[in-house]
Image (tube, rainbow, N blue to C red; front, side, top):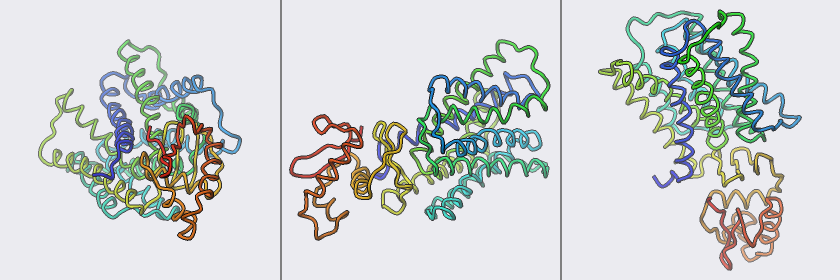
Length: 396
């Protein structure tokens, strides 16, 4: 398990927390919120959270990023939430969740067809096993099929998968707080007319109902989506989308703990299969990245992020323009985070075996890197010189 670094494990756990929080939505909605107002619940969940985060961050996207931000905001929040609630009303919750479980496979397909990044076969089979496990956990022989509900569930899964993949691919320069705020605000603006037209007005609410809405806003939107977009920025889109399977699992476990709902027989087997599939996908992707078969992971050192998939480096959310050699040196150090890479190894890998003695080439490139990263060699934040040996990128 050496391919699972400490930073990777932390990123996986924090990202997994997002769907776990979303899994509380069912119990909060059914036990605390007024009935028959799903779109109002979605609107009050995302729009106030988005506005609050925008006031907090006070950051605007770059001029060329507006279109991408609007598209991903609609896909990740607006369209997805609307389609999710249509599917939830037209289908049994179990069937909607099973259809939603195709998200990892859809992201794998996008990554393969467009980015030419093939997921390991173990991850593919694990994703299929996750769908089967979800069916074992949630479906019953009496499940009723509704064409409109099934269509909405499929479109919702496509919307979320496409939004996750595009968010990772476009890697907008906004910091996480601002990015989350804009995504939630755009999604809320899309949901607002639907909520006002479809749902009956919300006249009075009790203290418990207000507490429920507050939980959905603070935890279900601000915190969960912040962790989700953080994960998209640091992990592969396949790894992130696989985490979505944890949401219905969390809902089932909470129903068992607080509502006395039973998990036994086939449902218990299904729950174990789903959890195993999520772990298997993460393990397969981590091993692939460690073996250098896939460049889709990224490494973050504080505000510095190196994105191997798209050869992009950002510092505090802003992209840093690097030459090919500068990027190659930084990427080589990032792939060996915290460990010393010798001068000879860097020169051999980047300049070629005939240049292993040309250390001045490397010193010049490292000097330019430090200037662009604002790194003081006397007190380095990122690039550390090991005198007479080589360089390393700090891991904290």
